[in-house]
Each structure stands twice: as structure tokens, then as C-alpha cells.
Image (cartoon, rainbow over all chains, first blue to last red; front, side, top):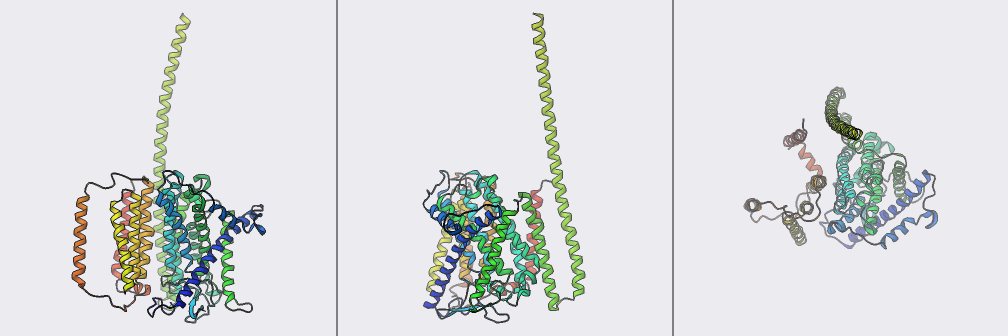
Length: 435
Length: 164
């Protein structure tokens, strides 16, 4: 925390100016980045599929998103007759506002030096400040809270549309979001453990000592992989896009939305992709850390930050172009049976290594107890899983048996009916023959 | 302090109004949403008390998980749009009595305990780190007891939900 977070010594115009500039810059930056992301996704995926993609509006079609946005403004705003009017109008705003809020904790620049107390500061209007809209002490928890509120947008949109496909989409969305939020949170804990702080600024400052100190390496690669998978699921991006699986659900939760309300959902979705990429860079890849190549020292961190974000954006598009969609049971199995146990186990391992490094635990004891505990946990876990699978198979077998019996009975009834009819026909023929 | 009082009054009135609408509205999803407003208002009050960790936990757990599960349950079963006439049960006068009594007892306890005590103008701020330290040192045993209780509840739910 910097200076006087609660403004106990009063507020002057400098504080207002700093806050206003930061908010406006972050807003515009995120909006432009989102527009660019939509164009980038269409163009990049077109390249991967040997198409040209948008190429009419502006050079390389770069104004296509802008043109689409303007078009959305002039379309009719439709609302289904039996939709819930208030909630139907509220839902897109929840999505859009939460998408904006999450970006506020990302430090987008500032020269961070290893071991300095108040590093990464800039001076604006005579005030020393960080290059992020807010640096709340709860930091990364704010991201988790905001992303758990973002579910409401999708959920309420699906419910209030008053039609079947959106409802199914929103039921899927809420189940998916709850399942993967746990894994997302637990993978962050390993980073928080090493940084010793929840604040995104402190997490970034902890990675200022070169690539070796970036948490993707020093926390082990596991939390990053878990975070990446869970974040993709939270974003409803392929291969986790069951929420809007167009082959099954038309458009999912936004089927009934049109014009600017649909555009808000669309915007929120891509904005969340940008935000999550930025969060991943902040948590695991040192945020704005990078070498100063020439001239202006304050300028390079921001360049490095956006370069790293761009890599993640490209990766999300690459996922979409390559990976087939998961089935619903595969999604749930991956979340509950793989990611959450893995995140918990890795957290224990990393915490033990940290304690051994600090010399509070004897390494030999740690290894012996660790192996024993890991073995016991593994046995218990597999036992639980096999018991579950067996119960499921038994249920399936029982159901199948019941179905077969039903089919046999039906066939018996049919056979009897056929026989009776044959007897009747024979009788008729005999009567006709005798006549 | 004036600004704080005004904001407190504003948030508190929203909370009270939403709580009232939670029990009076005839639409079950609206009732859940009013409950979300109540919980969010309480979170805002925690922020005003500089209890940032409690406030975030309020949002994360109650709004982000509990209420989402409520709505998930509603949508998985009936998800009715529009008004339900049988949403208010026959026992509502009894419930009103219980609620009034509970409210009276709580108000009496609060007034009796604090009388006209004023909040210190320069309070000690307990940061998230302090909360974590005290949970894992002073209050370790209650904390573990609560987690065992939650585990028992979880297993109980599985046992109840499974047929075999």
C-alpha cells in the first residue's frame, strides 16, 4: 500500500486528477484492446483455416469490429414476450461491469526493481502512485470475487429470456463456473504463498529479480497450468464453451438477445479474455518485468506487459482453432477429480518446500512424512473414485436390465397380438373358403 | 463522519428494503436476487468498517457460491417466470412473530451492550494478514473444528443424496 489509502489527511485535486486519468486510461485501453482482440481472433483463426477473414473495413479489415459495433447500435432491441423485463435488461450490464472491474487491479507498467520497498511507482500531478487503477490489499481476491459475480450476468440472461435453450445454457454456465472457481482460487494460493501478499502490486514486485523469480518457475509449473485450464473454463472459451455450444443450444444464454444488449455480452466475453490474460501475466510471468533496451526507462515495462498479454491472447485463439469441445461429464471430471486434488496436493508440496528452505522443517522428515501422506491420500482418493465408478456401473447395469425386461415384455405382447391376428385371418380365410 | 453516516444510512435502507422485498415478492428468482442485494449491502457495510477481508469473503462465498447454488437449484427444477400465488406459505404470521422477536432480542442485546458508545475516530485497522495470523494461531482449534463440521455436512449431504 502506498501513502494514505483511506485519505485520512484529506483529499485534494491531485488525487481526483490521478484517479480520473487512471480510470479513463484503463477504460479506453481495455475497450480498444477488446476491439483489437475481436479483430485479431477473426483474422488469426481465418489464417489458421486458410481463409482471408475480415478484409473490407479499413486496412486488413481492422475497423471491422468498429463497424459491427456501430451496426449493433442501430438494430432493433427485441425482447421476447414472456421474458422477465427488468432482469432481462439488467443481465448484460452485470456482465459488462464485472468485466471492467476485474482489470482495475492489473499493474500495466512501472519500473520494478528487486528488493526496493516502494518500487514500480510513477509521479502523476505531483502524486506518487502505481500504474494500476487500484491496489486493494485484498488484491487477487477481488478478481475471484468479481469473476464469481460475473456468473450472474450469464445466469440471469438465460433465465429471464423465458425460453428453453438459454435456460439450459445458463444452467451449464453456473455449474461450470462454480466447479472451476475452486481450482482457480487454489492455484492462486501457491503464488500468494510465495509472494506473502494478496496485493497484485506486491506479487509483481516479488517477480522483479529476473526470469528465475517469475512464479511460473518458482511456484512450479503446476499452478500455472491449473490456472490456465481453469481460466479457460471460467471464460467459457473453447474447449470449455459448452455454455454456448451452437450445435446443441443455438446460442446458449444470449440466444434471445439482440442489438446493443447482445453487443454488451460479446464485449464482456472478449474483455474477460483480455483481463484473464493480463492477470496470468501478472501472477506468473512477472507482469511488466523485462529489460530496458534503449532510451525511456518508464516506457519499456508497459511494452513488455502488452507483448506478454498478446502471447496469451494468441494462445486462447490457438486453443479455439485446435481443440474439440469437451463433453459435459468430461468437463466435470476434469474439474473435480483432477484439477482440485492436484491444486491442493501441489499447494501442500510447495508449502513444505518453502518451510524446508526456511529451515523450520528437517528435509528428511519432510520427505518421509510427505511420501507417507501422499500415498495415503492417493489410496483414499482412488478408492473413493473406484467406489463411485462401481456404483455408477451398477446403476447403469440395473437400468439396462430394466430396459431389456421391458423390451422382452413388449415383444411378448406384440407376438401375442400377431398370433391372434393370424388366427383371426385364418378363420376369415377358412370361412371364405367354405363359402 | 457525516459522509460515513449518510452512506451508512443509504446502504442500510437499501438492505432493509431488499430484505423486506425478499419475503414479500411473489417471484422466486426475484426473491433470490433481493437476497443478493441484502448480502451485497452487508458486504458494503463491512468495507465501511475497513474489514476488507470479511467483505470480500462475503462476496466470494455468499454471493458467488451460496446464492449461485440457490439460483442453480431453482433453474434446475422449475425456473418459473412470472408470479407464483402459492409462494407465501400459510405460516407467515408465525414466521413474522419469530422474526420480530429475534429482531427485538438482537436490538436489545446491542443497545444493552454498547449504550451510546461512539466509534473511535482513528480506529486500528486489521489487515488481511492480521486476520490470517489470528485464524491460524489464536483461533486454530475453533477453525479446525469448523472445517471438520463442514466436512461432516458435506459427507452427510452425499449420504442423503445417494440412493444406495
